[in-house]
Image (cartoon, rainbow, N blue to C red; front, top):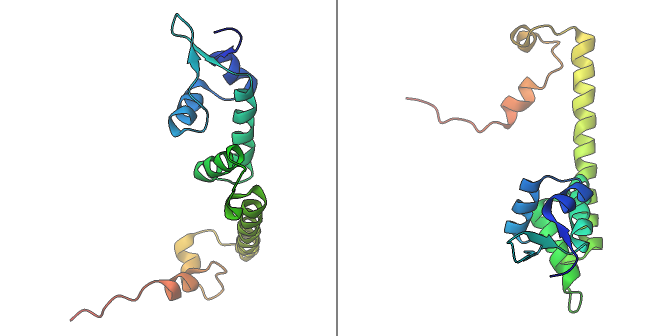
Length: 149
């Protein structure tokens, strides 16, 4: 085996730790490397790019399962299913992110209202009719227990 990068070199270049590399290898996200006669793992330089792609996709909110699907689809472009394409997955992920942002806006507004109301204690606040925290909303959504006899 000539050329290639040792595990530590790949990890440093990609900004990941050795345990992360081993985990991704076990999950099939990166291919198992060749080994030298001495048993050292030697990765092709492209592994650094694959690791960077994985980490970037995770930062965008993709799960490792989703990343694995996208990587697999990229490896087998011919006859690719449209639901696994980056375009399709990015569109779905964008909807999810926008929903989370909307939820975070509601949470921020509720926290601002709690600050403005001067809520200092959860129990006291929960018993107040002026409490802005969604205690009643949560109770309304909870499954109703069967009446005890």
